[in-house]
Length: 553
Image 1 (tube, rainbow, N blue to C red):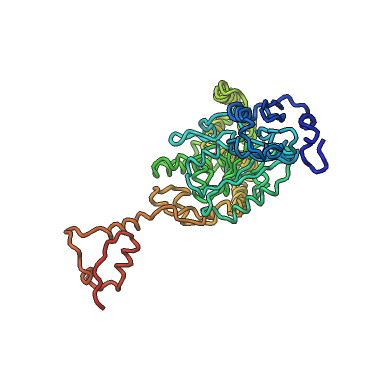
Image 2 (cartoon, one colour):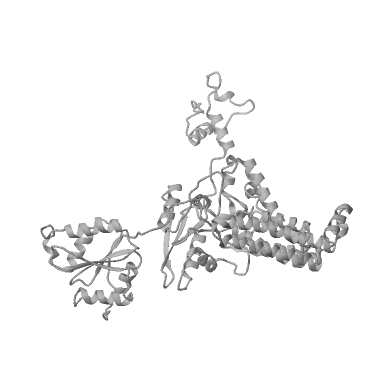
């Protein structure tokens, strides 16, 4: 068992130490102990967890190196076991992450993280070599955020792979990645990625402060982290952005935002996240500005339709029939003549039916899920109209609402809109348009009061930031987006050179058309430039243009 000093109990030999580890792991079947045949006249073993190590590296690098070390290759001072272990660490092994474990807790933690452990008879320490590997999913196309133009690779469940996908896009030494282990039992690796001198240092410190406050047994997905560190707990709206697209994370980092990667999930968090960000698709920045603007406006329109269409239908047909044209009112009255339910019950039945079909399509196998959802919607809708349970107009309203909900790029925001839609339907059935207006006022007050890492959730709209309107409801061409968004708190707001300023510099540096150099005294028709201004301009431009002889004072 463990000694009073906390050292690995090897004073009685390797066998008691191995028995202690096996007892701690419950004689787990995936715990492998491999004796190493060496010429050191000392017994040694290699231990690892099956399925968590790279077997190729383990066999062709570690075992061959250890068994290949000859006694005559060792210096005379390596007669003691501790000196022999240090020599192997420094000279024989070429693995990148090699360290000495002095306690049983360190050994078990490294063993369960994919390290191979080398123990030598008579040594009170063990050598841990990082050979983490095993089977995993390869880089594939993202399933939650599809695009017609842009990169087609997404994150997977391997943390190191996800980090490398980001570094391939941002090849800058200021891209820093700092990690934490969170979860007393899972010991999940969580890495915070940001661009130093670009991201706000106060916000980076706040992210680490919130991560360090997490005290839980397990972190199995980035959703755990999101709930622990978000500003507002009682809101249906997401205050952290999650995505499985490396290009979206890279774009956010270049705006001064902070990414949080969690081992074991392809979804990466991005903070801070604003309301307007959930309407932006990666494809907006790969298409022309006019096309991107049109698509973005369609998304905002779909957001309003998803949230308000059923409630407006209920309010108008129940309380405000005078707002409809006579011909339309007569048509709706004829359709509802045989319907036994009020408009609110009718809408709730159809909305709940469609939500059940949507959830069933998600849970069912992909080969039949889409067919069931489409056929089920058509059959049930037509059968409901024929049976007289609902009117044809209500089926049309629910169908338009359902299709519009898929237009919003962010799934978590779409779910929030669906939740609010039911509340607005209840208000419309009780108070008509006045109830809808009351609900919208409360909703706007709630949104303006939200914060995401101290940044107002509705930034760019409320508070209104004029500079950010270049990429909010509209997107202007790239040459016009000179500055980064202000809400990110970036230390360096300059994104690129102002095209107009660059044009002025180039025109000032260009020689006259006739090839002659204009004297300084006639450079301006009304006044001469101050002394030394041309030399200063030449030095600032770095081109040497405009350099002339100095006139005697």
